[in-house]
Length: 368
Image (cartoon, rainbow, N blue to C red; front, side, top):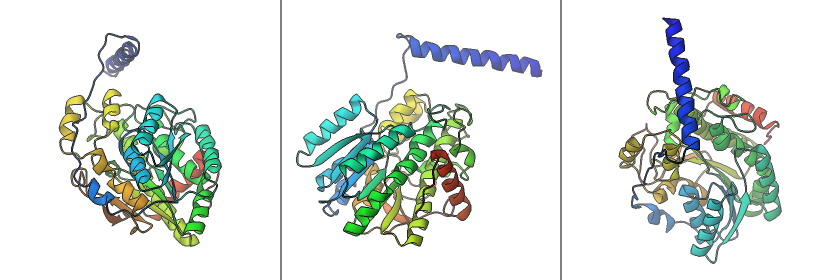
């Protein structure tokens, strides 16, 4: 029986590889498509109209070609901030920059090349940030993310989701920390804003293996969101890491007496390009995604959490902003409210796993 099963699995693997090769090389095989439902915004203007001027401040945001990053960049520009756009070089990045400049002719937008799937690129981006804002950095928003991608490794050997969503942001924050300190000392405060997700609830605890050089060997390509599919487990680990990183920063910043605030947000179920990319890459089915997004909110309303963290005058270090803090279906949409960090990651064990393994991944200590 075991021999028959072994042969069957081998044949299945061959068939999967054959299908994958056809999809990559054949023009005639249709790919899954997904059209966003164009959900109307309900709460964004109410928040935006309450935000103070950001004139004289410099803001850096990763992942601004679309979605929440684009909306946050546009909002900060309208509030008077100088906005640094950290994106992988592409036509999409060029188009987004042009769009932002056209919509906000009086705002200052600067493109900074940054590929979060490459530590080398992140280091170059950090050098660029030091060149363009020697006066300090008021806000670093670690917004960019990928979702439910295949079990593959980056050029540095880490899971593509974990490096993109957390490890490269950890490195970027470390390399730009002196700029944040300079702004905090000069202008009274600075902020580090991380972007988590409801998906942090899909995993029980942060595991060191996902932060180590195990890319390509972390659970395979199962696409079940609710029954432990490898794609979604890895994604959940990255989103838990985002929250745990905030808990670590908050603890260390408070202990050092720093004026830098560490904050984290989640977007609820927001209509962005993440769903389109995930459907295209096989992480979610088209029909299921269409049904799921009927319960979601617009990309503008999905930006409420990070925008509050970035710009609102009444936020404190160690807060988590989002439409709710419950399970998968109790925090999908609505105004962003402030909550304390959760015990599931704001504990000594999880903080130790996050900080020790992240430092090992980037190959240097991050001392605060």
